Length: 289
Ligand SMILES: [Zn+2]
Image 1 (spheres, rainbow, N blue to C red):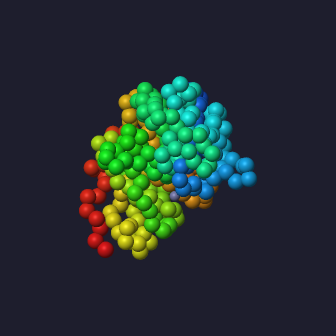
Image 2 (image 1 turned 90 degrees about the horizontal axis):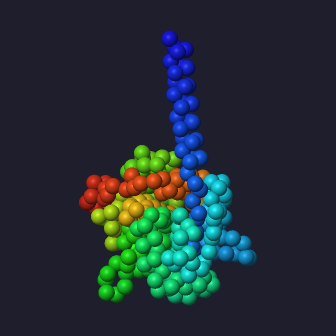
Image 3 (image 1 turned 60 degrees about the horizontal axis):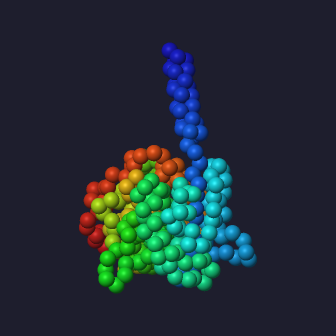
């Protein structure tokens, strides 16, 4: 009896393995474009030193290669245009500032239509992945109207304090993009603060709990708030992770696995896993300290 159960279990496992292998094989590796132009502050993971590829390019390029994905890394924001976007399935941004302006990193400016072209491309089925200062890009202008780009990303960077060890509380651990990260994922990082959350579309994946370490700084004496999220936009999908300031975060196998998982989820057909949940999972009251 025991033996029969063991055999049945093994057969079941084999069936699951075959199914997941063929799923991965069926998926054509996405053609990836990675933009890392910084108009103002340039983060060390996107800084080119001694002509060598930056750390984020090295990590993303390696992950793409392991997945069989064609991968182009650039600081040339003019490549974000309707014609060129037809050549890609997934666009990743670790950018900063107004990308239509010249920058010290030598990255050519985006054309005036670039922002609208990117959003339109996503609506028509494109996939977007943003890291860290991708939320510090195309800020809300003085007229107060949030830019189409930031509405797409899902929130706007407002600032940060000193680095500390925070805990990411995974609020949707069953989500394919989160299945290989710890449910309480703690590490030191520069934790971004936000406003203009696009609460109508956002599917929150992880909240930052600043905890006791964070509460040493006034600006982090706040309730847990979204730090990783995703959304649907038309036929396309968006994933944003506020992580990635520190080089050791990029070097972390857990972070790297989360990028692969997010990429696989983004490229899967349909928009499952994007149901808006902001009002359900984000605490309304600030914790009393
Ligand atoms: Zn940073």
